[in-house]
Image (cartoon, rainbow, N blue to C red; front, side, top):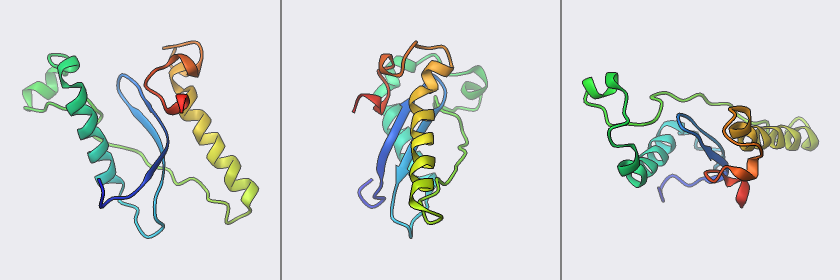
Length: 120
């Protein structure tokens, strides 16, 4: 991951999706490689916990992945239209990520979900 510099500003890992907020150089928007690196890392770390829990359709295709195949991207406004607007957009996405486990009924408060950057 050293050649794909980026900062994870916020992340939450749920039973199916991962939500993340990243900052990286303006000249590099390679989402696919970064997601592949992150998913690969977590898959290796959690392999023993998910072994045997992979969907039947994925097993038939010989896939071992636990994550969704695709990803959706959204560029957070960086304040070029006005610093306050950019900051608010960033905070809105940060809060969305941290409150996602609450939204899905997994916990009562963001602090209760251990797989989150909320604790940083």
